[in-house]
Image 1 (tube, rainbow, N blue to C red):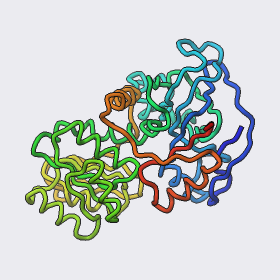
Image 2 (cartoon, one colour):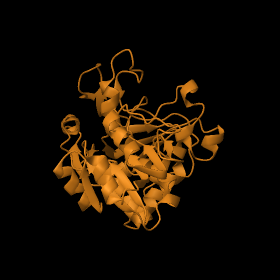
Image 3 (cartoon, rainbow, N blue to C red):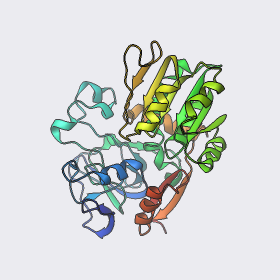
Length: 347
C-alpha cells in the first residue's frame, strides 16, 4: 500500500510503498477514506534528533476516517463496510481516566509506550490503517468523511477547550480566539453555537481576519503590539472572560494574558512553546490558566452530533495521496484555508 512517511530527521515526508498490515486479535483494519493534516505533524517533524522520540519511519496522520476492511479475532459490534472515525488519543483502557472515556489523559500511556496514530503509531495518511482497538472507532452516522474527518482533532480539541469555559460565556461576555487557522476557525464557530459571547478573533494578516469574520467572529483584530489595547477597547476596558490561544507561541501567550479579565479563563491550546505565568499580581484576580489536550471519546461523539445538526463544520482543501507532500508544503507556508484533507482512495 501507499503511505506518507516521515523517514529522516529534518527532511520533508515522502510517499512510500509498504506492506498492508494484517489485524491481530482485537484490532481493526480500515480502508482510509480521509485523513487530516495538522500543525502538530509539523511540530513533530521540526524536532531535532535529540528531542525526537516518535520512531522512524513514521506514517503520518492522526485524524482518520475509513470503512472497516478486516476484523481481527474477537472484534464484535463492527462489520466489514462500516464507516467510522478514529478517536486519536489512544490510552491503556484500564486507568481511571480511560474508564471515563478520557483516554487523552491516560495515566499509563507514557509508561506503556502507547502513542496516538501518526504521533508514534502508524497513522491515517495511507491507503489502509491499523486501529489498535475497536473502542477507538466512532460511527460516522451518515457524515461525509472528507468534510468531517478533521473534527476528530480540529473539532474535538477546541470543543474540549471551550466546553469547560461555557459557564463564563453568557450573554454580554467576551471570548477571544487567537489564531483563526485549522483549529481556531472551528473554535469560533463552536463559541457562536454554544454561547452568547461576543467573539473577538486575532490573527496576523488581513486575509486571516476576513476568514475569521466569515466563520462568525464579531470582531477581528491584528495580532500585533496593539492587540491588547484593541481588545481592551472592544470590551469596555474589562478584557475577555475567556481567552483561547490556538497558537501558543510566546508572542500570543503574552497577548492572551494581557487581554484576560478578572476571573477569566486563559486556555493555551497551541503548542508553539509559549507559557503564561500565573501568580498573585501576574494576572487579573482569580484568572485561571489551562493547557488542555485533545478530548474524550464522549466529547467526540458530541462533536459529531453537532455536525449532524449542522452546528459545526470545517473548511477543508482536499488532496490526493500523491499530493500529500504538497499539502504539508502549503501547511508550512501558511496558505491553507482551514484544514487540508488527504483522500487516499479517491476514485
